[in-house]
Length: 219
Image (cartoon, rainbow, N blue to C red; front, side):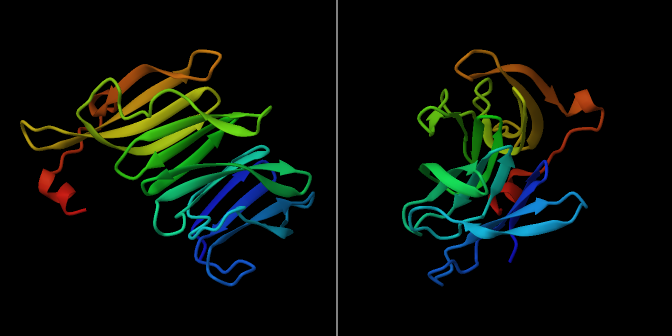
């Protein structure tokens, strides 16, 4: 089953986390598709696989230019991992592996910045260092650092030096859940992010999203 896909220019990556690789053990696999001058897409002859044993490879996939990140469930015992690949010629070559994490919900790449969102957890940020081919952790994981009541991070998006993500907060006084959008920007040479704006539902004039905490507990 296709579980993830992303596109950058004329290159698309598609993840099949339940597919058999060469060993036939269902570790998962990803494929590259290229668009030709006529607009048609064709699959590359080589598959994209991690260097080490894993399961669920291709659960989340993202590509920007010659850099891609692909998540996997690990070996089923010690958590999830995110593998970093760089396009060298026609081959995607693994450069580094981050983890183990809790369950990886999403991995996203923009330029040389990689974001790893943990389900009901933090947003981990890395800067890919092209001289060492390693993903270097940035500052502490983001989990709405300006508001410690945040319980989890929702949707995220990155573009250029900008990062947006949705936080879902729990109020112990009224038992309701609301959503806000936080906008960050990379402000320094090291690639660290700084909060520049915080938007809540009233800023969008659509009303606030509220649900009883009991519904959240049953998720």
